[in-house]
Length: 354
Ligand SMILES: Cc1cc2nc3c(=O)[nH]c(=O)nc-3n(C[C@H](O)[C@H](O)[C@H](O)COP(=O)(O)O)c2cc1C
Image 1: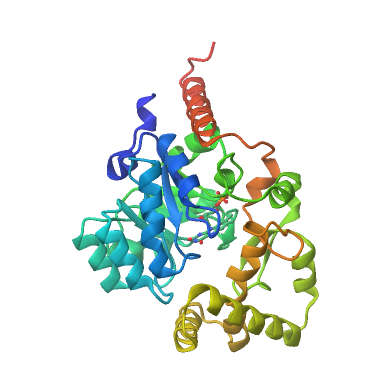
Image 2: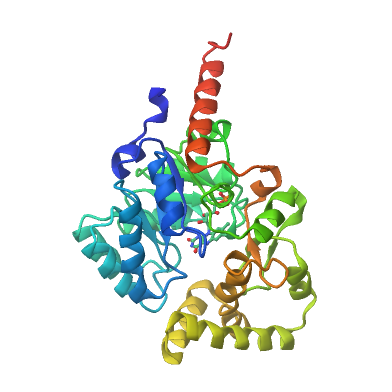
């Protein structure tokens, strides 16, 4: 492999190539994580949509499928985050991924146990804060990225972030191929993190009916809405999103209450726990009361599309990149292809192209 493709990130995480498969709720299952790791990349298990007491079993399932290192991604401000940290430490998981509301005491527990801390940030000032709190590498997700997203385009975010922090930056938001990987390295990142591209692989658990919606979407079918949970989320336009965009506050609130009760059953969280986490989110993200209630919507509505295979009544978090993805390679084929394209691009830039 070209030496430019072996970065500090590979040494830090113990992966062959500087490519991360990000934590995606309902999607980054043990099977997908293990397939990404076995292909030479580094996968993050999505724990945000697993009941905290069940996370340890999911970690063990990844271990059964791969002997390579992997990470666990979770929400630090959600009920049960401490239970997940305990499982990560007990199982000697290589890395932890987290984003909003970093908790200094949980980060200390992870670092004391030698877990590599890899938060995701969407703004340069958040990256500086994350580094001060002990991040060993930082995923910087630009506006093109799937799911919750910010407003700064990936290209500007990465070059700005790389100037501001010393730890390795991983570029996220809009990556799918080897040219993108080389571009990310040129902007100052030491690798790429991809969500949507790994969602569209042979090992992804997403049911066929939902996958077809992703594959059929054009770039301008992907939009940002605040109507799912009060925070800007990048999604594929569908019947549900169109309905939510037209809904008034009363029907949004009613929907959120129903989802909140369903999520309580699913997550095992008590009502006081849910309220505490909603209030923490509210103060951190400066949400209104109605938006706070809407936050309960997201996991339930995502599950409908991503697990139950109903892309009409569920929502489809997605990066803009889905508009230029039209195939479902295995993780191994994908990683090999990206490395081949990156080597070709690097050779071309060095004037070595035949
Ligand atoms: C279906 C889906 C679910 C996601 N769920 C989570 C999540 O649970 N936690 C998280 O930190 N990020 C989540 N994200 C964001 C991704 O981890 C990643 O940062 C983003 O997809 C990168 O942009 P890309 O899709 O252009 O590659 C999700 C993204 C998608 C597409």
